[in-house]
Length: 375
Image (cartoon, rainbow, N blue to C red; front, side, top):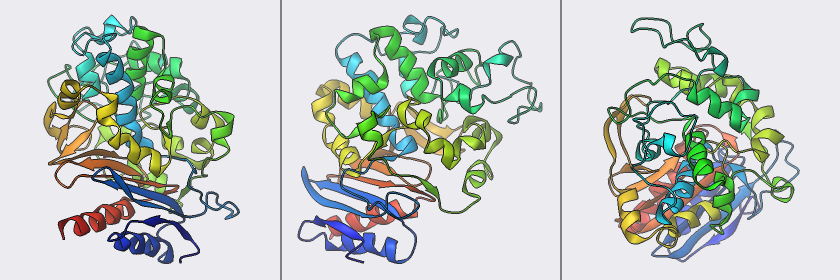
């Protein structure tokens, strides 16, 4: 498979290349890239497969793909940068900056750490209706909780209005749950109100190949995503709790014509529509000390919410933008892309794919790299 996988690895990291090649030879992967830094040096820089479903465009070093929630920390950094320069107060109410936000007890810190109480949004057309009582009928599409449609979600101002019109799931700061689709829009409204900037505009100042809102030129190097199985979108919403199915929005949002469409690529839905290369996403983790002053970076990476995540229905630790697991912090995205940094082993790794499936492929990259580093 050497004709399918290109790029290189530093001496001693050949097993990562072999594992990456195996993903293509087994059929698990059709187009992806992986990059890793160890001790500050780029030791893995590989790409392979195709950038389109017709298999006419080989994946290149600069091929971008949507990475879904793996981009949440990048969106968080846009706000953290403005906290660093004093234009946003971490513990100020969200309503200080987003004047239309009706929940005065929710703070910027709550928003960054998934504690704001708004993990799911209803269509703004139902603003007056309260959430149903326990044992009621809050399932997606019900009269009590009609979901926003695709056009509402992909319009930044309309989706923000829908979020603001949605009753709280819990009092901010008293519980937490991943704000799967609402996270970036809440942060975006804070940023816009404080500085007049969008998340994408601030991210462009990082000087990294990660993006919210692609230009025409960047759109031309974007991979075309595909589903690993025909029923992949439906399976993402099944087998979890009802909050999960409400928070992920309508299943149509995961359709290939939406995720490959112009509104997804050129607009800003900063919880999920980051487009990146593996090089760019791994470099983001290497750049953290450059992007934030040390005291704020230490606070940002420290635990903020610990316990059972109401959306994920499992134990989780959230920081100000990252999920933490021991010495590792980072974020995975629905479909299989992932990026993070391990403080103990001293690596940053990013895996970017266009084939929307499970996380086994990226996990293999982490496991292989960690086995090398542990000797």
